[in-house]
Length: 161
Image 1 (tube, one colour):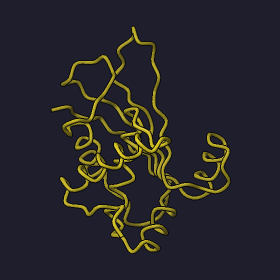
Image 2 (cartoon, one colour):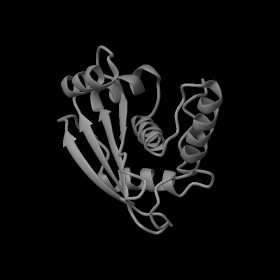
Image 3 (cartoon, one colour):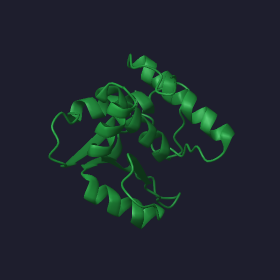
Image 4 (cartoon, helix red, strand yellow):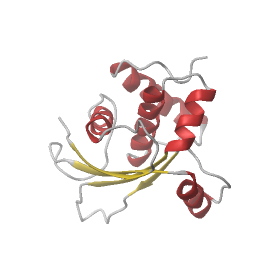
């Protein structure tokens, strides 16, 4: 089993934020899901390090503008760590989740708040592993993995109406 070492930074005062052990479960479920690949050249039993920063709208807006050139906050941003191939560092990268956006989306989409958090952390973790959804074929792969991983955790398909 591939373990994860999670550093959680709570920069939001909203209540009901996921606890560290739950975030770790979600990340480790991604890392150990059949078919999910990791290109890091580190032993399979070595913990992969992930920082999850939970922010409010001000920081979420700043980061979205700074790194994506987009106005307003977004729900999740992923920042994969890029090390030289000859230096095997077990650092996956950083995930930033904007708590007020997650809350608003869950309410608007009539989803469980916990299920929406799980989806976004899983989505962000897959981005750290190199998965993307720019091209339709890649989006199909990524979404199928998200649905499978969420089902393993007993959460519903976030893409079904």
